Image (cartoon, rainbow, N blue to C red):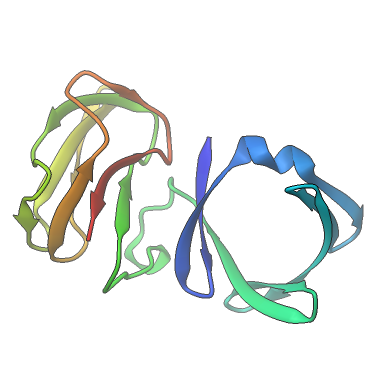
Length: 150
């Protein structure tokens, strides 16, 4: 399953299957094996989420929960690419846009049925659809990217 995090306010997708290379060595300190190299990462909680310290450099990080749909919990991305993710497991009922379509904030993008309810995923900002990753009838998991806006 993929999770979305913000690192220094930039969205990053990570695959939780890759987390097997992360080992907790003491409270707040993790050993990370990446591409054959071992790194020590210190996690420091903060009001903005958390700070990650690596080789003397500090990064701000925030893990985004796809189930939390309150406006205050969603980062507002004004520029760059933005993934529209499934909020929970379900089935794609209808894709409302095509690649290349220009959308306004609030435009419906895709309808997903979950728990016998249909949820319309809408654009959180104006943009252009650069990628449609699902088709009508596809099954999706929570946090899966459905549409990419730019």
